[in-house]
Image 1 (tube, rainbow, N blue to C red):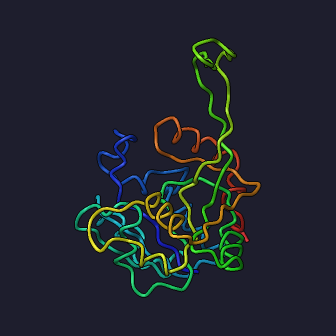
Image 2: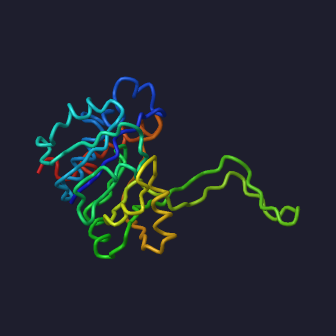
Image 3: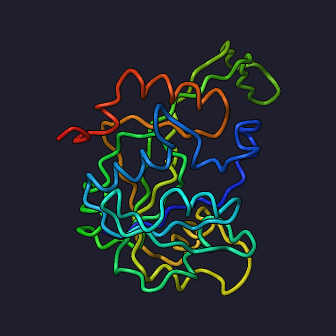
Length: 237
C-alpha cells in the first residue's frame, strides 16, 4: 500500500507550538503526531510513504530519514511553493494503481487497510473517508416561511457527514489535476463527480479528530494518554 502524506502546512492555527517545529512533529505523548500516523499505517499494511513537505522540511526529513526505523520506505517530495492538497500528486512518480492521500495531523482509529480494500473492490476513482460530526449552533435558529416564524430552536445540534482528510484514489485522477498552480482535494473530488467518475464515501466505527487548533491538540493528547493501545494497536506485539 502506497501512501502520500501532506506534511507541508505551516500550522498557523496551532501557534505558538509551530513557531519552531512543523506541525507534523508536534508531540502526542512521547512521539510526534506524524509518527503515530506512520505507525498506524505500518500496522495496517503500508509499505511505501511519500511525505509532501515544504515548511521546515529539513526537520521532518532529519527526524524520519528513510523510514527504516519504522519499517517503512519513506521518500520526500519538496514543494517549492504551496500546491494545495491535490497538486502534490503531480510530482509523485511512480504512483501505484491505487493509493491513499491524507493529511499529516489526523488523530483517528480508522482501519486504513479496510478503507483501501473497499476502494479497490469498488473500482471507484476516489473514496472519501467520512465521519459523522455533531455540530452545536450556539444561537437560536429560526425557520422563517413567507416572513413569518415557523419554528424556533434554541442552540440546536446538527449531524453532518464530513471528510476526514483521508482519500483512497485511483491514479487516473491525476489526469484531472491542472498542470500548474494550487489545487485542493475538494476541487478534485467535485471535478471527478461532475465528470461522471465514481466517488464513494466510506464510514465505520472509529474515532477521528482533526488537530487544527490548540483545543483539538489538547483533546488528542488526553485521548492518546488514556487510550494509547487503541491508537497504536500492535505496539507491544
